[in-house]
Length: 257
Image (tube, rainbow, N blue to C red):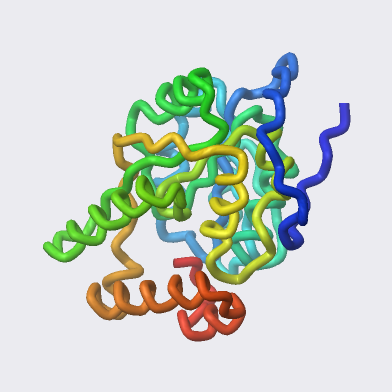
């Protein structure tokens, strides 16, 4: 049976309700983990090796390379089930991975983020209990005290608003992801835009065991400066600013951090 292709264009004018859960395909993996990468050769092998347990539990692992200039794609082929090539951009790459995947649940995982040990069981239980999508709490691996405040605010804000960011390892039923049109084709804030679409279907399952994500984004320009910048960008996005202009303000660079 051919699966509908995921759209990466803007949101539909429809206000979608929750579609019925799709029947599992015989022989299909129940979970597809989709990892967008760009110039991650230094860490990709360790990151993918840490996901082998998930493959053994019935998941598939797809890496989507956005045109790396390093050896990351070759290294990924040694460990991933599939390595795809696409145009650069997290939204484009993750939509390409979703379109090529076979699982009934999709998990979008950044290349610098580590899942908690019980992630597969937690996702399976959340979906079995009726969740159409969800995310994990987040912990940042830096030692600066201010990062503990960042973590708390990210997790608290997500529970309050029902909005999740890519750092929180978003998972979603395939049929729901396709129903809302996938990730909007944006250079920045694609995760927040997807969460807004998914909220039309239902609120997320907020799983408390945290993923561990790299502090490199905050360390690059300073924790406080990065916090203030992200607040300004998200406020501007909320009030309708062009995401392409926001990407310039963010300093959108070849690295996807």
